[in-house]
Length: 133
Image: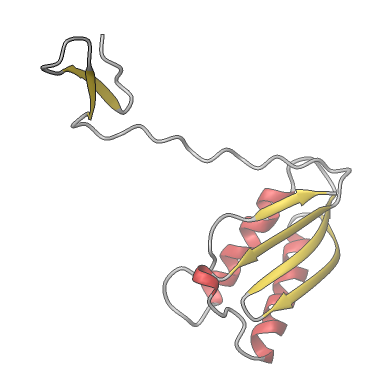
């Protein structure tokens, strides 16, 4: 029975050899797993501009992002220990109040920032990178 995931086996002219070919149906893709966070740990979180492009262009951009940091903390309880903003990326030291608070907090922050961004296209390079400490 052929695997219905991504590939199917097809016999070739050579005895005992098999070639893998793509199925004509939509290939199976794995969803990204939810980022788990534990409330009792500090996390170093960072993200870069898409293609390492500049995201913060002037003082208003920096101040606007700091305002969003405060608003995010008011929406989802989060202890913001420290942060660093560079022209094309940011670093945050976060201490979630509860388990699994990091994901919703970051989602709100980055989505709110993108909605207010004056550029076009993708703003951030990819999913948030976070490391517990």
